[in-house]
Image 1: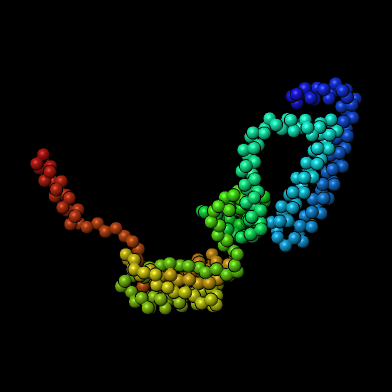
Image 2: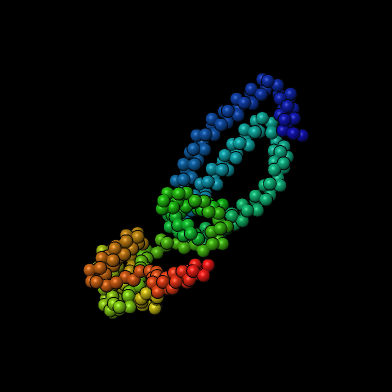
Length: 285
């Protein structure tokens, strides 16, 4: 039986007066349900604030909201004589498509449960997933919602979060700012290291404990590679990085030390030889 045939049968049984009565009752159900659902939603939100895990509270609120809405829809459909078996019959048309979609959905739901239980991050944390960096706005059963620093909204499926390497940038209260640079072979290496220590200790946002790190990393084509690591409160990470880079440039210029820059050298002798070969070929031609 098609949906059209079912509706025609219902109309033949109840008539116009019965149909109007059903519509009135359905409207009354909706009118009564709206304030009840609003109060229920408000109460669940208030209750969720007492839950230590913010993401669990969000999922609880959304679950109650969806279930309540579904109950109201079923009550309205019941007023029009719809039976659950008939609805399931209509839904059977979409069974194949839903079955394929549900495989991905179930995988995301299971992954979401693992994420909630493992707690590698929480709402408000800044994370990096592959090349994407953003703060977590919500953790749902199917996906994670991120807000990027340039104000973009990104939805990441939970299955992707489970399979990817996720870096929590704000899990700990302090972070180390790493600035890698190269000091010329012509400069005094020990003097350069001491200058970097002074810059680190003098930075306004740097922490005294743990102490700054100045580490020689190896020989490069244009000089010695040095890593400067300075600790800061996580909230001050980017400001300290800007301060360090700016101060290093200023101090190196002031002290006459060189920061090598890769360059391309064109040898005139080679260029002259190429021109001579070209000239000889033209003469022979």
